[in-house]
Length: 95
Picture 1 (cartoon, helix red, strand yellow):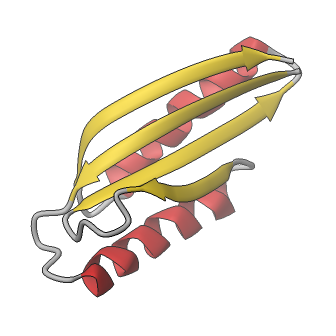
Picture 2 (cartoon, one colour):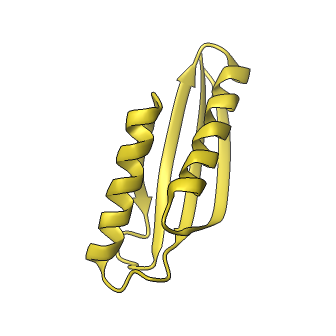
């Protein structure tokens, strides 16, 4: 079993309040969860209203499949976020 995880950081220049940020975060995470079989959660920068950090995890029996899924999720989130992707950190673990 293999897990592939990513920590994505987005910059949201038009978010003036935490409420604005949460609306964007909820929409993006709900879309990703409904389209992919992956765990998605806001993991950091909770109190910064223009920075959104999202953690994504994929578990699979095949490393190449998990990598492909993660690549697709990252592309999807970058395309559908009403924000700019400024950082992406990936990690892989075999269990």
